[in-house]
Image: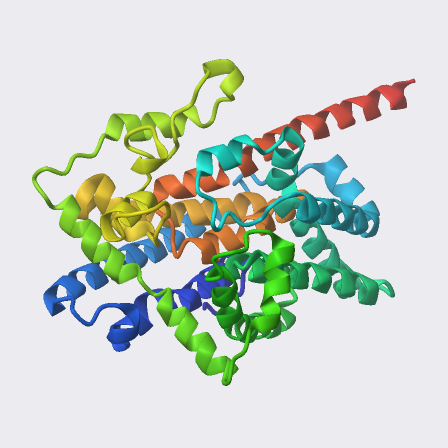
Length: 425
């Protein structure tokens, strides 16, 4: 972390912490991470690839920070909506809390034990899809509102904290660790954006302890073969027992530290003379994802080199390593960039991704309250879910947020225009 505190470097610090579990511990605990039989030079190669990507990502962030942190750089400022939010943030907290509860109790947040993913997603209604798309926005509004309430020392903060804690507890029923810690790290981001760094560090520490405690419990729930609904998962949790919480937490984290193992398998396949990557299909699918289906019709699977889900790298990893059933395995920026363009692209991709992080931070987090909410809504995705993502994954992840920003920009201008019309009348 740098001397000059910012939410950008807090994000990178959180990413660095979670990278310990993926990149550092597996080297020292080879038996637990499945690396015991991997040859040293093969392991060294993928470790070097990961370090190379990380190094140039940081250089890209530093370059982008110098480039974008100036007064001329455009930031997302929506005067009317920003003012409206600040006037009503307490009400919006409870409104978003209700909408989030509706989302939670009407939508399956986990797809474990689903045999046909396409059929599962096709059954989802438009209403459920809309709630799912906005769920992180609801949570981000709550986190930013809570950070403001704490900053101004409002009397309502106790009730709002209880509501926010309830969200965290309910997410335990998803059996997914990333979901369970999302409210905590959304709150961390919101605190940083409002210059409450001391409290944010305390919340980060709390989040880490929370992760260690719940990690074996989440693994236990996921391993239950006869449940798939949230209620059934919570009912089945009564049979959960553990002797040493922190030891079990560490072991459960190490059991998921399979990144290097996946990378070695993928790199071996990618280096094969029979390996082929369809760059045209891959890039065109990303471009097509920016346009609605109403305009261009059927859209190919994004981030896939064959237009289908089977061409996405995490699914490719599953089919390469496990070779049976339906699933995906951990794949992050370095091996993804290597798949797209080899060693040179690992370097350039890391640098450009870092520049993207800096631009994203300045444009959203340095803007008004609405910009801060949109930044918070992607904090976990960019800092924890992908450690770190490659350039194209980064673009796809921020795409919905950019689209929302455009819609809000138009709405803000319309509000300004109506305000002028009323003033003239």
